[in-house]
Length: 457
Image (cartoon, rainbow, N blue to C red; front, side):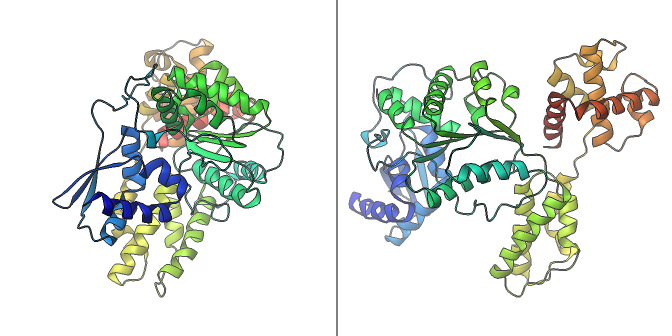
C-alpha cells in the first residue's frame, strides 16, 4: 500500500468519523507497512494505540478494503522510546511527539479534543425508574443549557447503571439546544493523556487555555486520576477556573467522592460542593422496562420473530448484575433466534444464555461479606467475629450481619454461628439496628450501597 492510497483512505475517514475524531485519533497514525494482509501503523502513545484499536479499527479496515487494499486486520504499534509509561510522568521528555498529535489551540471554531459520543446514548433511549430518576432529572436540567443551582453535577454508581449514558445524553442535547456552547466530553484517562502530551510538547499553556475555554466540561470515570499528583493538580485548577467563570461541570465515578482512595482532599471537597447523585442498582421494574424498550427496537430489526410470554420477565428476574449484561443477553437472544429461525421461548433463552444465567447465579458468602466489610471499615476480621463490643467494631459487625441477611439465604442461627457463635437474637438485634439507622444516617446508607455493589459485581 502506497502513501497515496493511505491518503485517499484518510480523506474517506475524515468524512465518516468527523473532523474532530479524525484530527485527534487518525491523523497522528503513521503507516509503516502492509504485509500478509496486515496493515501496520505507528501511534505516538500506548493510550492512543488502545483507543484507536477499540474505537476506530473497523472504520479504518473498512475504508482500506474499499480502496482495494487486501487488508485482513490492522496492527497498531508504539515505538519503545516514545511510549508513555503507565505511571504518570512529571517532567517533559526531550523528544517531542509528532506535530500532528498536538493539542488543539483554543481559537474560534477550533475542534475540541473530546472522546466520540455514542449516538445510541440519548435521553430518549434512557429508561427511567426509581433507582435512577434523580440522576435523570438532574442531567435533564443541565442539558437545558441554562443556569443551574448545582455545580458540579457528580454522578456515581456501579458498572452498567447508566452514568456514561446520561453524560452522552447531556452532550447530545446541548448540541441541539445550545449549538453555541463549547461542550467537551472526555474520560479522566484522556484528560491525563492530554496533560502528559502537553508536558512533553512544552504546550502546557495551550492545554490550560483550551480546557479553560469550554462552556461545559464533562469528565467520565474521575477515579482514574486518583494517586496521579500532577494530573490532580491540573484538574483542580481547571475545575476552579471554570467554576469561577460560571461554567458547568459534570463528573462521573464508580463511587462517591469521599470513597475514592488517593484522591486529594481538596478535590473531594470541591466535588461534594455540588449535587452528588447515586445511581442505585436496578430493581426488577426498571430491568423489565429496559428489556421492553429494547425489544421494541429489535422487532423492527427482526420482523416476524416471535417472542413468547414470560421471557422478558424471566430475564429481568434472573439477570440482576447490570444493564450492559442485561442488554447484551437480549441482543444475543434475538440474534440467535433469528439465525436458527425459532421462536424466542423460555427454553431457547435458557439454552442460548447458559453462561450469563450461570454467572448471574453467583452466590455471595457470609465470609466474603465479612471480609469486604472489614476492609471497608479498616478493622481486623478476627475482631469482627470476636467478642469486642467497642463502637468502631460493633457497627461494622452489625453492617455485616445486615448484609448477610440481605444477600444470602442463610438463617439467623446460621449467620450467628459464622459470627463467633452468637445467638440468633443478637443477629436480629444487629439487623434491626442497621435498618433503623440507615434511613437517617446518610453516610451509613452510602456505605451499605457501596458494599452491596462491590459484593454483587
